[in-house]
Image 1 (spheres, rainbow, N blue to C red):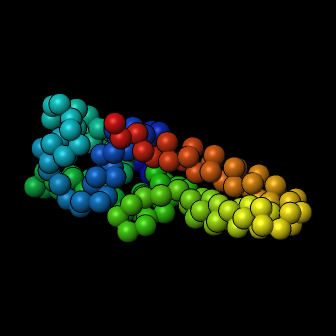
Image 2: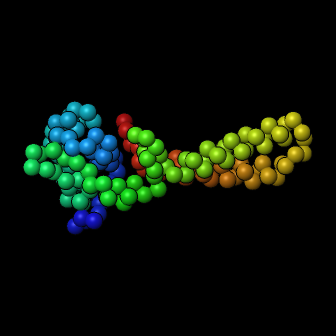
Image 3: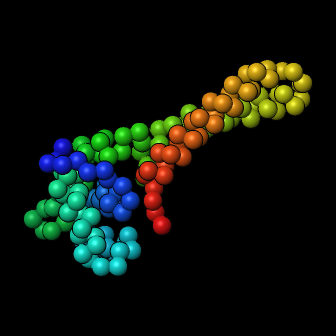
Length: 142
């Protein structure tokens, strides 16, 4: 999109998500709401985003996200209301429910689909590992 496409993560990602969620905002609002110690720290992250083409500054000095850039930054994620969650979260949740059901059936009727439960457990473990990996990339809120 921009001249360079830096790896957007950490505080820079937090600034982008703030601009995406809140719309046009001033530098001081970003500094205050995200807990940056100085305006220059917020400015540093905003400048990275502006240079990459993910955020723009209007004539009044307000910053806003470029909507079509969210697909690049948030690849593998989806918006759920105001929250941004990994897409694999839904599959992980579904298969967690399935494995819980099979675990219950295995306890109440011994020998009932033990292999299916084991396979489901493998799928659930894989999905949760990938979901957590994506969440860690997205959320570094400290």
